[in-house]
Image (cartoon, rainbow, N blue to C red; front, side, top):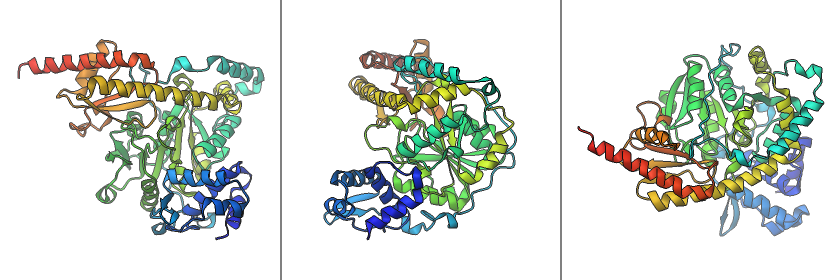
Length: 498
């Protein structure tokens, strides 16, 4: 194969928005060629030395591309060299089709123009409660400077209602960030600024399905998504999760075909699993065949530490029926209440009409300040610091749990993010322990309510433990306190008359 010609073809398709560095351009080109079938499954790639000589680039650049693709599951090393992994792409002719063959997007809901909102859930301030970042570590002085600059730049015209999609410089900054960091295929025109990720989920629930349509949700899964889908009068079907996330069976597809599928593939909430590349590609194909939308909630992938995070599901196929939802509540701070939703270009006009009258417009200063924060490099710097900080805090909590509660809880979900999942092995109900802990000033969020009522059983009896706001030196004390509460509830249950 002429890899120089392949790079040229990739450059023509990507245009000026393509990757800037040579090593990232080669990585993106090879990934594009594998997904599009231009490099077949099982094909052996040239050695790094051979390919670097052919392309006239440093060998380290080729090593970077191969290692990154290997970490994502596209390539595997064999005794015969580096080969393309078997991912089932040959069975899916739709993946990688060019725009002339683009499949028709699933239709929007009839209720797309009808606004529907819901109350926000108050943040919890108790130690170990999940979902709250390390607020005391946020660079508040830098943020204040961005806010001051934003207000100095605002004139009287910008005090009016903001554009429906949000402040254009912020949408441009988000699109650039997502293309580089998450492999999302998008331009600023496809980005909608929302009231946190919850606003994006509510937008999806209102516009992608009609009342009575079937929506699949992870079980256990994010309660906020469940609330948004229920508020839209959708029929919720719980789908089991395993070590690779959402795991629908053939019976699920035939018995309850969905119109909307909610997933957290980068870090399943609350159990922490990462969806494999093969399952992501299979899910895209199956959703397309079923005429269903995928709603990808990528709420905290920035903090993954053990492995290179897989690219977003949305970016694996140019024509995936996927909506990408993100938030700044975890990467910045919850009170900012800014999120974003990336939609396929063909449905942007319909969504503009659908949400034009909802009143979800404004906060120009906040959006302008956030655009400044991102473009100035402060956002990337903050993420780097938080990634290192959370890794230390996660390690401290894991060690304390193993040291003090090794036979009482089984921990999972430690690959990154801001929380751990701890299954309770003691014969007591997690809800009872949580209530007792709350009285004593400890935030043990029970795991069982993350499941649809009646589906938790004993497998999902435990806790979702947040460590982002926990200094490492407090881990031992908090875990010992947790153990005392479990023991108190256990003894009380044992002494209760039958």
